[in-house]
Image (tube, rainbow, N blue to C red; front, side):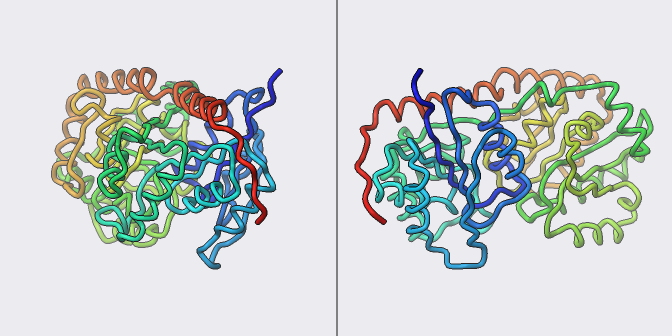
Length: 384
């Protein structure tokens, strides 16, 4: 039997987020007889380190938070120590691994883009675009989680879009699915009456998610409907300011609940009626995929990969980022027209099963890994 392919994944950290969750899913559901996974976190570990270890991955960490940004030599040494068949770096924070891998002649190099930092959502420093282009050229394969992100990086760097492969994120529709019994139990636990309209979101409380727009939209909706609750699942730097906004807004007080980080996301999604995502930037939102797999019609901004996930008017509704008036109108539509909401609920789940399944995502990554390790000749390593 052939030896398993050794994959070294390089990421910024292993905190909570879509990229990290996607990596956990890839490691958890890939064929353990064919792949061995090591994950290198550059800055710090986090809650997903435990999940990765449980899935069978080896974890290493440079522990470089707050220290020098230039990690080329340390990454080169890690690559030499692990001796992988393939190095897979993700996002700008880990892009030095491409150059380090080329320096020590790693057999195969993959770099993938999963999203944007808030400060680079509109423009990017020219020197960063130049270095990103260099890394793309050095890599054996460049990946992106959405067509929109592929096209954006192609435009910024001049790297041909046709040389960037899109692999959409996937979700486990067995774990995330409608469940009437769980819905009733969680709603009773949260004090939600059977007829109360529950709007929810699972996301970091950060500027990129633009919770103020979500809350303004809900406040306008409140003037037309008084049987609703909003559940915000997640933690982040804006929590205190958002809680203050709720306290200062009469229409929101007592109706908005910040639940913090939760290990019961599937159960909480089952209790909701509509999923709301007000992000100003997105790559491919895992939480959006999970919500739709749970049978929730989504109201999401038309940014990033959201329009690739939500078919507007069929599996959910899209609105321009920041447009809380339009958001309020869409909430009212789904509240008043239950038949529309139910139809979108069914189509949302079908779309996830047909286009964004976890099995499809894992299979696509495995095919990339196998094709590269079969096609790229071994490179003689150099001393670091």
